[in-house]
Length: 228
Image (tube, rainbow, N blue to C red; front, side, top):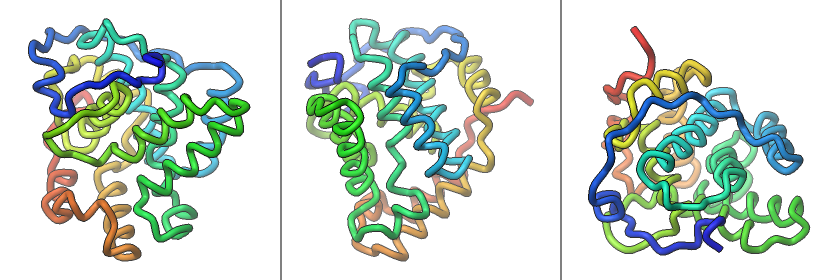
């Protein structure tokens, strides 16, 4: 079960990790090359704009690097992290954003769960782990608990979107990951996608973020991801 992240951890990063370790420079790791990982990489490449795809690949890389430095006791399966990362914004694709009246995280999680069930021949633990993490990846409260897979997805996405949690990763690792997977104006791309969702679904979960403030944080992210 722990390889899928079904371990109860505190949602608040500062409580889940009371003594952050000094991060180390890490190289970009190869993406998993198994049949399942390749299917989902091909699927995401077809479904997602280049900016969103690269964001998802950066999230995978950050997750691996942060786990190595900060959570070495976790035994999350690398392929599970990859599949979750590559699918976490699948609900924001042009087709899926208007494909249902559900908030993008929820609709994306349902799509991901069905795909994982199908491609794994019915592995419900795998499918549930991916769906749970995707549903909750924008649940940015500071109370309660979450799975370890869900926490690392939140840490990595907020790192890439608003520059949170930079103390958990080495600056050279950020540079290396962003050189491998360029941003392509990600801040504007993500802000526009959120605005599009709110225009189409004014009740959506993204509104709990205080969308104007959150968009400002995205657009005014001061973290240096690229070498000058």
